[in-house]
Length: 342
Image (cartoon, one colour):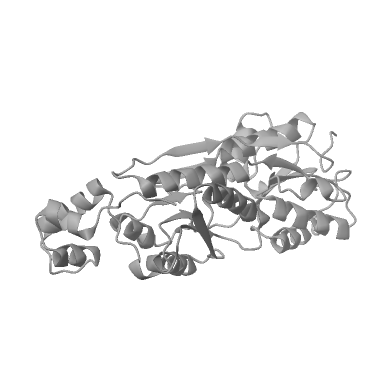
C-alpha cells in the first residue's frame, strides 16, 4: 500500500500566498483570478506535484489506480499491453481501469474524463490522431497535473512516451522482401487516426529509396486496423489485378489487417506465400498457431506496458515534478510461413 503523503490544496495555497478558494478557482479555470496570480498558483502546483484528484472516488477504494485508454477493444495488441500494465500494478498495489475510444476523438475525451472521475491517479494513453483532432483534453490533464504516459507520439505534446521504432521496423520488413527477390511490393496502410500508420508508411518509402526499385504512390493501399479492413481492402485491390500486375509481396499496418488480407487472397484463389508473401506488424501471440503462420514484426507489448506503468507510477508518487521520459523499443522481424523467396 502506498503511504506517501501527497501535498494538499492547503500546501498550494500556503506556498502561493493565496486562499484555498483561489486555488480551486484556478483548478476549475474560472475567469475570476488574475493572470499573475493564476500563473503563480500553477507554478506552485507544478513544483509541489499537486493533483486534486477525485476525493469521492478515492475514498471509496482501498488501492491507488491506473487508467488505460486504448483505441480498439477488439485488437489483441492492446490486451497484451494491458497484461504488462496489470502485472506491474499488482506488484505495486495498484488497480487498473480500462476504456476504449474505438478511434473516436470525442469518445477519447469522454473516456479520459470518466477514468479521472473514477479515481485514476494517472493514465496510459494510446491517442487518436488526425488532421483535425482536438487535443485540449490532454492539455487539460497537464494543466491539472494529472500524470499520463503516451504509447504513441503526439507532435507538440511534451509527455512521457513508450513507443516502437516504427519507421526502422517497417523499412526492415520491406527490405526483407526485396532481399528475397520481390520487386512488386505494396503496403496495406493503417487508419489516419494513428501516427504509427504514418510512420510505417515512411518506413516503406525509405526502403524503396535505399533500393534501385521505383516507388509508385499507388503502392500505399488504404486499409485500416481491423480484420475486416484487411479483408475488404484485399478483395478490392487484388480482385481487380491481372497476374502480371499483381504484387508478390505485401507489408501490412498490423497483424489483423494481414490476417484479413490472407483470407481475401484465399477466396480469390491466391496462395500465401506461393502467389503473395504477406508480412504483418505486432507479432500477436496467436500467429504461430495459424494454418499459415504469419511473418510479422515483433513488438515487446507486455514489456511496453510494464515500462509505461513504471513511468506513470513514478510520476504519481513523486513529491516533485518528474521530467518527461522517452523509451523506444526496436521491432524485430520474425520470419514464418507467410513469406518465401522468389
